[in-house]
Image (cartoon, rainbow over all chains, first blue to last red):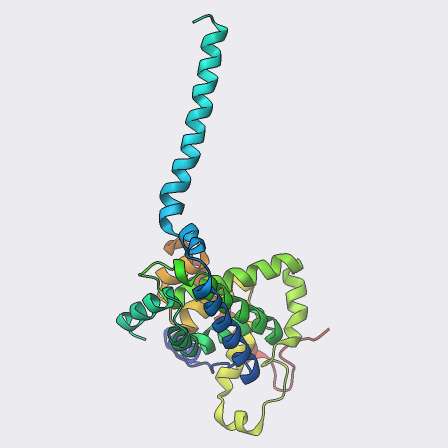
Length: 87
Length: 195
C-alpha cells in the first residue's frame, strides 16, 4: 500500500488529468448561434439599456435618487410636525 | 489563456464583438461543460445549464468590469445556476444518489478504446467523485480538476478562503476514503448499488 502523502499526490495528479467532456456539436453550434444573435440585438438596441446597466447608475444615480426621495419625505414629516406643534 | 489576452477579449466582449465571444467560447466551453456534467451528473441538465451560462455572459457583456476574470465569472454563473436548479427541483441528497445511475461515466460500459486509453484510476476517480456530496464535489472540481486557485474557487462558491480550504481538506479526505473503500471491495462486487 502507498504511503498517504504519495497516494494523495497520485490522486491529485489523476484529478488534474481527468478527461474533458464536450457538448455535442449540434448543441454547441446552437448555443453559439443564440449568443451571436443576442450580441447582434444588443448592438442594435439603443444605448439606454447599457446606460441603465452601467456602474454609474448602479453606484451613483440610484442611491442619489433614493436618498433624494428619503430627504424630501423626512423634510415633509418635519414640516408637518412643526405645524402640529405650532411653530 | 494569458491575462493580457483575456483582458483584451473582455474589452471586445463589452463592445459586443462576436469574434471575441467565439474565442472565449472555444477556450472555455469544454471546461465549463465538464464541470457541469460532473457537478450535476446528468448530461442533459449540464447542456441546459451550459447554454444558460453563455447566454448570461452575452446578456451582461456590456456591463462586465474591465478586469473580469472570465473563467471564474463563468464558473460562478454555472455554479449558481446549478444550485438554483437543485432548489427549484427540491433535489435532496437521497434523490441525487438515485440520479447517480444516470451519471454518464459511471454506469455505461467503457468502449474498447476507453479500456485501453483510460486508466483504471481515472475510472475509479470519476465514480468516487460522483458519490461525494454536491459541496465536496464542487470544491474538488473547481480546485483539483479545473485548477482554480483556492481564493478564486472561494469567490466562485461565495465563501471565505479559509472556509474553502476546510471544505477542500474534508473533500480530499472523503475522496480518499471512498477510493480506499473501493480498493477493499472484493473483485466482481459492483461499485454502486442501483435501486
